Length: 504
Image (cartoon, rainbow, N blue to C red; front, side, top):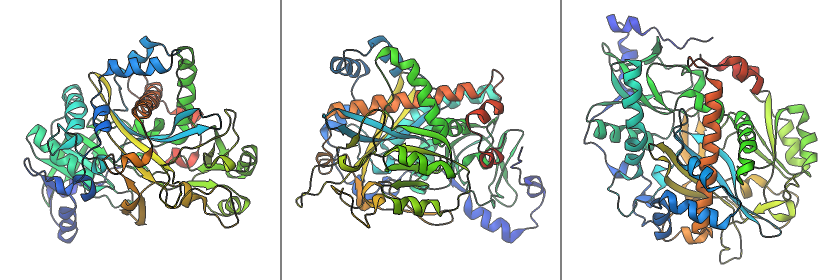
């Protein structure tokens, strides 16, 4: 078991390391109430956009109407079960964002396919304001609907006094936005604290499960609750069990929110339960616990086209699309930190998509441009668990850099045609975003996506189902005393490199 303490007790009693403390002081920021500025927390193109009426209508659609419409189009779906699903209140996975692909078959059977559901997702800065929203947008909806109620309940249970904090390792635009909104909602100071994974985090520690943050040379403050936007291997510096309430807790990442290996198993388990109710989580065909040496065999099984993923990476890192032997050979020549992978069927153009057990699916794609080019896109839908069940918060889309080719030719770059993530890694803890490929849910971009209201409802149902599957996996991995069941986790995910990183 690793220890994440950084000997802050010395700094509470003395200030001998002045040059070090100056750099720490510049890292931790105090956010006061009344400091929220919308221009600091949205992309300019989103802040100045007008939300599309259909998207605005969808985000305000009542649960009963969603159920009625969904079951009308799918008579085999059990209404009572769907009502229970949309009324579900998560215990651990409290807010998430699913990435979905709008796909179809040669027979025209459309479906929204879940690629992954992320804990601590981005999205707020890309969402035009709702018609009836003030400038705080869905930042405030998430804090008021989800964060505030859970904090009120669990802080009292844990009996920890202290400040509120937002902890982050990227996306300062949204992280600082959450900090400002929390300060306004709670009417108190909020600490904005970097949690990078470069092992130089000497401005905080966990002691007896309580997070302490070094604000200055002489001031170290306990934290009673923290909103987490830590995405890069968060389990290597945040314990699974804490007395400081953390939203989302680390178990949400290990159980699937940042762990594609366990997520795939969680979806499979939940689909077994859902089958009797006419429901399922739509996913690519997935092979898990795959060693690097086995990957060519599984790629061959899928017809020579596949997606290989490092299960614990995110922000577009560690995903490899393979459409020919050149790309497979290039992958096999790489060295990796982790030892196990997942291999999934590839959804591309019909002429070069994987052949899986459910048939061959391919991207619906965007409406062709004036050059008759079709670009593929994904859809990000962010939701959170509330007292009324799981509710949507915001949504946006991302398109690929190059149009989808009808046929594979020598030298084709599959990632340029299929990769949609906007994050660009510039170096250690340095990121940028390619906003030229951001598709807003506004009057201009939304029509290009070729989506309708029923597509948005299906995306919401798929997001909700995948979120519940991960939350139920969280419940299975924590025993009645709220202790992590490491033996069970090892049976699900035996990658020793990962196991060595986890702080319990």
